[in-house]
Length: 371
Ligand SMILES: Nc1ncnc2c1ncn2[C@@H]1O[C@H](COP(=O)(O)OP(=O)(O)O)[C@@H](O)[C@H]1O
Ligand SMILES: [Mg+2]
Image 1: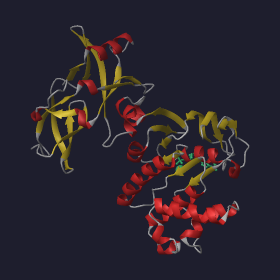
Image 2: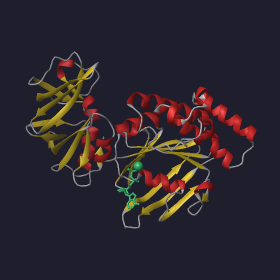
Image 3: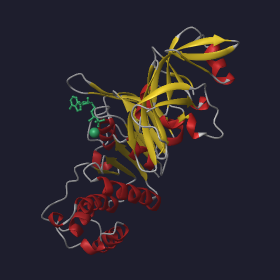
Image 4: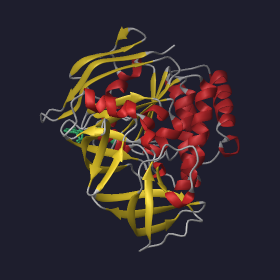
């Protein structure tokens, strides 16, 4: 059992800088939760406060209902795997993994059984006699993971554990960690600056910016209903398009205009904007590249907007798909198109937006008004 509860947790560094502000989160037993955000947003600080490596300067941290603010790291039953996994260079893989258990003066037979079982799970059983210098980066990372597993903690904290690995290995280890979570049945808090990693690994994701939690949701919810402009731009690659637009009303329908272009919103979306008093106001419109369609591609089942004239400025073939970047009157727009699309740089095309996927954000608060 390991439930964590963070209540109004904050970190003010001795120099007065607030690394984390009013962080509130309940983490369920056996949950795999991700903290994601750009460098410097307070992910490591939060994790280190949970581990006890950093003082909590305000608020309360509870593990299984018990306040642990002042409990020593070693008594919190937490194992941490860092980005720079420090293995003991003079010890074999076996001894590196056995070390925390030896420190705890565990029974030698139990140590042996645990190390071998863990090595098997992590596919390290043939490497037990090697020294870290004779291992690849990925193997070393697995040993670091193995050492944490051998401790059999209540909670695993992982701080960018894959960031030193090459792209291919990262994808491989990502899958390993997912499997590991299911096997261990442990609570895992995993930190990354990489939104793709967050989206593929987590069942719940905490998005952070400047020490402040922005949104906590499932990957699909974060993607389809980002709470503000920051989350909308941070989650998803290539990025969501943003266009300055003004809200209008014509023939009883609510519209968004940019440059000489006007699109008419579906009734439900329009009603929200109207009821909240946005008619006549400037807003930021958001639309993901896959929701911008080239009208030549005859997309079925899409609730499309009026057509918009666009001139292609960049064409990128991605394989089965391509990205088009185009200028429109009042902005520029990227669009995911099929690789068979004939448009190239300089082509004049007509695009349309999937109206069901248009997001509208308040210009001042940057909060989402409607999705
Ligand atoms: N000891 C410290 N004193 C002052 N500021 C710090 C200290 N450690 C980290 N910070 C600042 O706190 C913020 C959050 O840092 P960190 O939690 O390491 O971010 P992340 O892990 O998300 O990249 C950063 O702006 C960082 O510069
Ligand atoms: Mg960090």
